[in-house]
Length: 406
Image 1 (tube, rainbow, N blue to C red):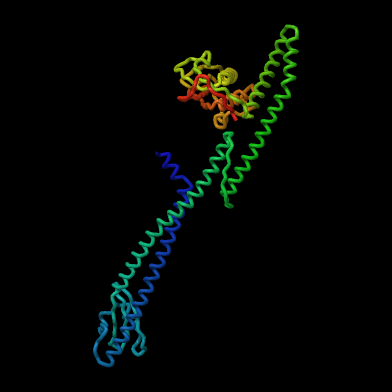
Image 2 (cartoon, rainbow, N blue to C red; image 1 turned 30 degrees about the vertical axis):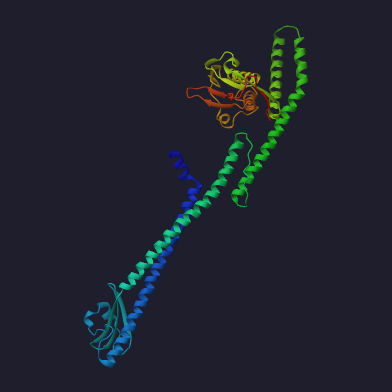
């Protein structure tokens, strides 16, 4: 669960969603502050205009009827001190306004000791401002989820396309064939096309390598057979034994190349039949025997190459075990290099003497049988290879069937 949460937290989809949501929130906050401030200024201006209007109307009624209307007051003492000091002189016919403590004041001097004033409470203004704020909060509450959903959809689409390209690149890095098949004209599509072009180039290179290996093996087959025959005619002696050993190694190399070429072609027919796995692996410790659907010759090739690889590069076989449908081979060496554990067997790639074809043959033969090969390094040192074979289904007979590996 923590890994899933961590992946969600660090995913591009989440980051895009949070970025869009943050941008929308910042925009709404900025617009809200500006609108709230401007509405307050406009409301105060309207309240000031209303106060001046009522002041003018009250003074007009006072001059005609000598009565106080529109809450007009002639008491200068009640005026706020800043307003009293800012009043124009009598006769200038100008009014002054002042806003403080939730009230808008408007006053005009009518004589040396006579001041007409009006005070309006800003309660309606504050109520309207509070109502505007509530409406803005409701609008933000409706807009933000929609914005988050939009960001999630955009981020999910972009993340899905990138994951598809990453998955294809990972398959290619392990020697498989995959394509992104991402359309569009944006940067993700350009990246996907680059991955597809890389896959095409690697596939062409791999086919050239396959063809070269097969051609070399077929071209060397006859000359090597001649060398083997000629070496048998040499007189006994140490030089002859040395030469025969080198010729034998060359013959095994050609045979391995031919086997790899046949596996690469994918056109071989395989005769599968049901066998006890323990009987197919001589010298193995059988912890638990099981029936498997295999070709015995190919099982022998897998086990032989694993044992030979362990003897040649792994310091010798320390354990050869049959555990159900699995064959487990362990050695006492330093383990597999990191690139082999990551990319699998690489032909003509070896950490020591050899051609690196042994593990290639193991993987190829296992693939034709539908088996899986797992390679790992043991914590205490050494390497471990586990080959898991297919178990027969309920309808599988003892004679098996013939299928094509391609």
